[in-house]
View (cartoon, rainbow, N blue to C red):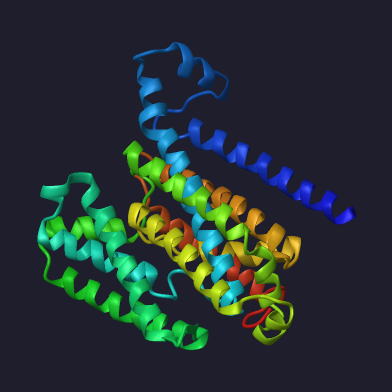
Length: 337
């Protein structure tokens, strides 16, 4: 009973924080909007400039920050729980690198002229899917997924993808180089509502599906043999959650670019706050990841106005500082939980 009350308190606090950063994100930018006028502008100021700013730019950006931040953080929780390694995230498994390579290839092939705004997301998603398929084929033996070798293979794929991206950038024309570079360092500036809705649908579906495995992940945290003795189908669980985490990361990276540290840092701090039970860690990490990314995006678009910084730069700097702080305080453990 006491535990349930604490979990309800945690979720309530996170929802309040999410509401606060969302309001801050809607109000701030090149054109400041008073918080008390937002509802009035949305429902009565048809055709006004402020309404266009909210509906066409800031609201889709806010929703994308919510879905991408939540998805990357949730993917980090799932992968770290599956591999029992706190350093695992979509980037270290090569999923982000595969997406970056796909976008780079699309840029030099000029696919943007044929597919328009969908060229980069489609190419990024294809690249991440190819990496996932490659990792699975390389590390699945007789229906069993070898987690340690999969992690090592993922790290190598990430290095190889990065090298190919650098090679492509070195031979690209100036306009192609700009497209590749701006996408790689991450941005939530995607204003296409179809992509935003697709990202939100995949993210919420991924949260619902992954939550079905939260008890199994608790058992896996004790070790695979112990999980087997507790009645968990270890291989089916690993394969299922890996597919879910890969899709979450692949869709997010393909739309918003490579945004690092969210999937690595957020789950660590959430575990330090709520413990290691995946029944609360999943939900708390999802909400915390959304809050973190919306806050970073708000900083990215306001710190050097009228210019805008890539959100991936902010998450990298802030996430790295927080991670080092936690390490120096010895409140963070690496390797097995």
